[in-house]
Image (cartoon, rainbow, N blue to C red; front, side, top):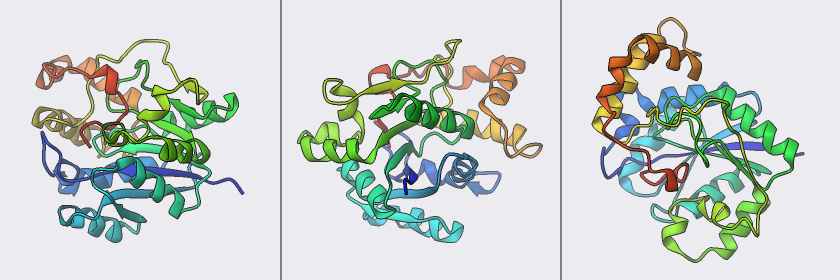
Length: 250
């Protein structure tokens, strides 16, 4: 039986904002909100958090235990292997790779990316290359067979650090697909890499979550249209389009 597994890649040793995945929003770790949002996706059969064996990530493993979410601990630098082994531990046939700096991940977009991947028969499908959705909604889907092939072929540690990047670098080896939005919102920055990003995302959660914990990315867009001055909090940070979706800072 085919099994779709979401692998949420997270660590605490972020270079620009250490411990960001555990920073509290309304008294709750940011990662806990993200887990809730991912679990709302209807096309996902299971979710596992992939963190490292480094003691700095003990707190992530403890949070997963509290939330009763599976947690795989592997190599800190070899993220490709960590994601691959985490997916393997739950016998995944389809892998949805997500990263811990995207607390506003949208379950509807996760489902749409999975369905497009299946409809097109792709090896790899994402919604971020080229980017048309806000930065911070990055969703990547690949077959376990394709990820295994990448795991076997890739010997560049810089590429392995970015988990699935090898697949996108080799369209001659893999059938690639992309979910595109009709309107380009890629200039919107909803990821959390910098302190200013966290301030914006915290404000979004504090405004939307109490009324509707299942708010969508379109609700966020509407909120920012009502409060355009909020964008100035992190507007000076620029999206790295080349590494979109690679988890470069995770």
